[in-house]
Image 1 (cartoon, helix red, strand yellow):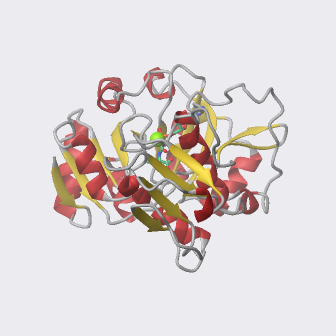
Image 2 (cartoon, rainbow, N blue to C red; image 1 turned 30 degrees about the vertical axis):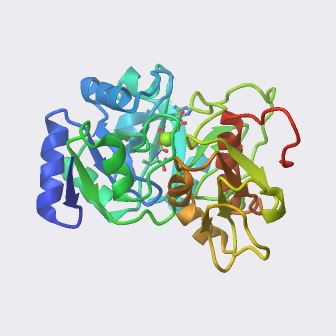
Length: 329
Ligand code: TXA
Ligand code: MG
């Protein structure tokens, strides 16, 4: 894989050429790195599923560089959507809207809807703007693994399977976009993400989940996602983390001594945004061969902390606790 400086025009032109010829290209966004293909090219999009080993029932998000061409891809944009576009686009908010036939079925896994977002990262915007076509892109990680927030994460995962990645520096948010749909005159949150519920509710009414809790509202809402290879346990603090062959993910500097071999602190000042931006890279670093378990400290569930906790809970569900006393969740 070639790593190209995304700030250089020549790199953008190389990436555009690759996309135009049906290749897939990894690129930075303000949330996490994406693995992109021209959304209107089903053969190119198929490569994304293949390279990520992603099941075909899990639809991709389509990225645009501005709202002008939205009407070519979606019909029926509710008033709430327009309001939120003004407030949060470009930025980390994905809206699920009714799709037009210009979006191939492979992108949406056969659904009548498509998730659309306009990223705010300048490299992503320049890439889409130069290409002048929408880019379908999931996060640039193998299916089920943690999302990449550094260019080296992408290079490590897809060294010989993706021809090039544009380097746009470390992802500012470090957590994926918030995914919403529109129902009952309000907004339903499918995935908590970089835009918090508090921020959304300044503009629209949030509709709580009305269906049975075990119903998947979105095909990608699988119970295990974003998971490290090693088992992960949620803990309240260092005293719950007794095993020595372990890693410890701390929200803020721990007040007590830690037994774990490897420790990462998400924020020295206990700031949730800083914690979110370091989250995936810290967890990737703690997922090591010489540990049996990763302990992850709970974060306050407000603002972007809710998105981090949603991902930690999913990661913890991948390897449920074995018999015997376990730290409380
Ligand atoms: O921040 C992000 O959203 C990043 C960057 C690259 O833009 N992308 C990302 O994509 O996280 P991905 O594929 O890793 O996650 C997209 C999620 C999936 O869980 C998928 O099921 C859901 O969005 N999704 C996409 N289209 C949908 C639709 N039409 N209806 C319901 N869920 C949808
Ligand atoms: Mg993903």
